[in-house]
Amino acid sequence: MNSATPKPSPLGRGLSALFGDADASYQPAARIGEPAAASKAGGMQRMSVAWLKSGVFQPRRHFNDEALGELADSIRERGILEPLLVRPLPGERDSYEIIAGERRWRAAQIAGLHEVPVMVRELTDREAMEFGIIENVQREDLSPIEEGEGYKRLIEEFGHTQDALGKIVGKSRPHITNMLRLLSLPEGVRDLIASGKLTTGHARALVPTKNPLALAQEVVKKGLNVRQTETLAKRAQDNPEIHKRRGADEENADVLALEKELERVIGLKIKIATKGKAGTLTLHYTSLDQLDDIIKKLRG
Image (tube, rainbow, N blue to C red; front, side, top):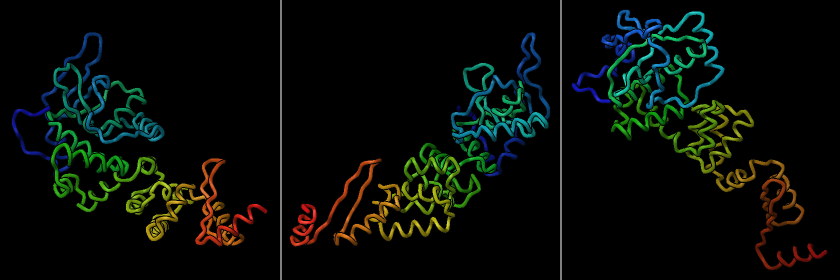
């Protein structure tokens, strides 16, 4: 939805500036037989939760049920202390899109509230996405992957440069770059980051490696810290073939030890590749004499 008249954007001043400029013109009528759906108080209004919809530019994709439950308990005790930011949906009566505050809206429903405090603003799609990301970044509510995906959309869909985006969200250009680089990781690694099993520091160390998924699984399995992960990643870069093979075998230390033992006994380079309970055993020879020797040993 686009505003008819251009107006200065308060983005650089944060959400407090946006709320301070709130449009106080919204005054929905009460329905017959129901309490007033909204009441006006200094620009903040109360609105039925049924009138609100998730924002199409919401950068959050994951809402932790346990955390929502804790927020719902807090809302029951103290109410919602900060209003949601919403914009009217064109062509729809009593229908508003949540720009900032979807987590509070979800928790309010769990808490059994029928109304929530809101601020209504006329915002363009670009402003809606910018404010959604700003709020979540300021609250540290986004996973690194969600943050990176939000930045990517702002760059690709709305033409932001990384420098301009950094000023809008209050982050340095290197921070924006690092968040975007995380999106190059395979889906399995991104899932581990989104679930909180890997931190941004862990993920940054894995970005330049050849087999980040295998390394990420090792990091989680062994509970490695960021410094240990950086060491592991450097070793993987220095020995890419070893870590490629280890990745295929899910870093099976027993298999690697068995390879070394067979190489010592047989005198040839050995490679074992496992897949479930099956696998392959490969013998490497460098001369026909070595081949003749191994054939004689196999024939017994």
